Length: 175
Image (cartoon, rainbow, N blue to C red; front, side, top):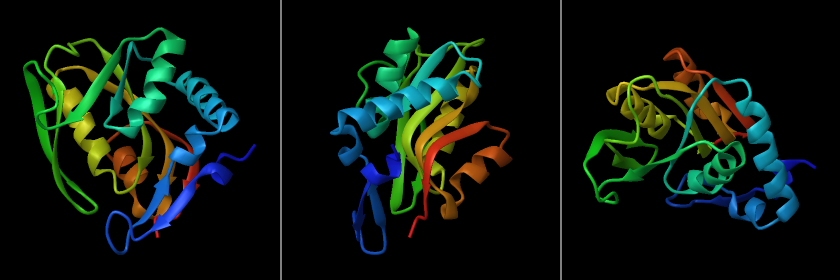
């Protein structure tokens, strides 16, 4: 099964000039979703980690299933003002705007090694912000696994330049 066959492409969403890669068509297919989770679990063996984190919101879909299967604690990286307890926060740029990401201050501690999972990487701004939050907490980034890499937008390369290990299941051009 080719997972790429289960990704829908939507032009000019969320704004003109963006080609949105939609994972809802993948997760609604039980075989494709199962294969994607199994592949993430297999690739996770390349990393040494004790916690799994996901980036809001589509990353939650994949990371929570992987966390359950691997019996690892699960951490949520959320948009500003979505978490009720004390948080750490980082401002960052997106392909189509700016945002703030937060994580509960007590989610990570020194000595933790965090595997970050998300559905897609484009320019890498969101993933880089998540890495900064891990570092601010004094934990370390074990690496990243993405379902989709928009290879021509340079996000994976930017993370690698910062010293991070990166895996992805499938690749598409960003435009």
